[in-house]
Length: 226
Image (cartoon, rainbow, N blue to C red; front, side, top):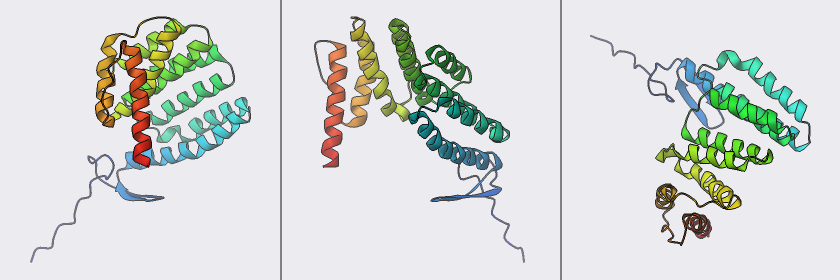
């Protein structure tokens, strides 16, 4: 009589590699591969440290926040197989330097983050928003607008809701510079409208249409909550 073979478990996170470790945290209890176990562990470390970082920034303790960021990377870099922690640290360093008013250093930090690459388009958009804000603080609004336009050239329907802030900032900088919004961005806006289930507004200018779309999305969200 043949005995049934032991069932092979595939990683519950990547769905590719063999599951070898049990990951238990909060409402998660899954068998995962070694790499995914380390990645989830790093995300927990980052989440815990981000609470402390935000507290330090709000208290104006920017040097302490930077030290915390560096310590987090140093202590856990051996688990960072896909660059997640390095990118997270780069983002937090750039953000902390901005809040400290060290805008030139913040710009360098945002560029350093970009050099590491982005896991997905939402990270790219987040980087662009931070860089634009930093360039604005440095009095370089035209460069900030270019950064936002470049970021909008990358699309991924999966992360479409994240593009709202980029579109709104694009309109704000365009108006600040007295420049028209390129009509091609209405395609992105139309996709966003469809995603949120609202009609794409028709206005005299692309900028006005995008602003009206933001109002429509906000109203739709309020109605849904009610």
